Length: 386
Image 1 (spheres, rainbow, N blue to C red):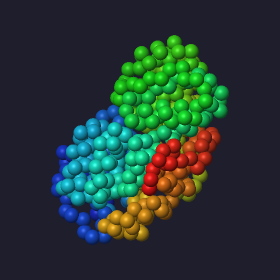
Image 2 (cartoon, helix red, strand yellow):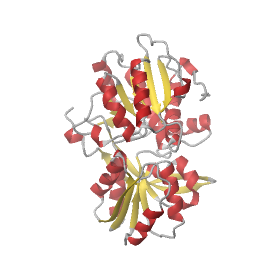
Image 3 (cartoon, rainbow, N blue to C red):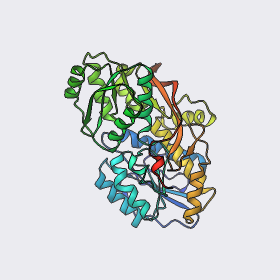
Image 4 (cartoon, rainbow, N blue to C red):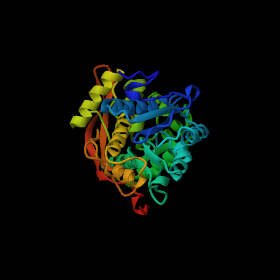
């Protein structure tokens, strides 16, 4: 079993916080040193913890002793993420970086890290700025491009006949991508469009605007604790409009905090625990056995990111950048999503599902009810020159 206080299984050196960090011995030839910067404290901690736990589960299951992982907490602060990245690159001499949840942190770290010859494997953040003209040879996103799940939500709202959606998201890169993505596939009228403060917890003003807008539906992207706060306040407002959103606001950890208010809501995701393939079945069972909770899409993304890395290590030495990059591009691993491939801009081409929030026993969770978009690539790939 993985000891999350001091992960040393299979020779891994894991440091769980900046305060605990100590200089590491240089990795010998043939080994890979991974620097994971993710959010382990504050309002978004659940997302980073799930990415970390999914990643480490895959490493443990692989039995590979040639990986050393250093884990640090960015506290959801760009300046801290930059400081940690500098330390990992300059002092720790990492080969590969991963872990960032938030797009503003990714934009602060990824371009610089890849410019210094490091590979970055994103288990979550997929800002549009890194998918089109700003695509990077050493950057691979294993989750999605930010717009994707919101595009599927827009397509679903259109299919359901919603003609006047009120839409809102936080004012940061992923929030802007979210609303652009929804509008790209939504064919109705936008009754109102709001950008909220990142980390906001009081939505009384926004709910009042929804009430007065004449909308027939609501689309929102508010990940982590933001989504919990909004859903609870929306449920108590007496507004009876259908809600559509991406999985980030209806994921496993969030649902337990929201409870009955989320039942029946439709949301979109590239992953769910009921995707029927052997890898996903085994992942869900082993994650629950290891950590005592159901996995989230963030955990599945961490798991897939580690398995992508392992697949590349089996084919090439990280010291041969061209060969290692080609091995990553092949994506020759068994994904929890089933078929997995990268587009020309190193973002996934994949199915996006529509899920419904249900209750299984005492647990709130999701079930897939439809496929929203099939073999879907992002809107920016054509502008990437790779």
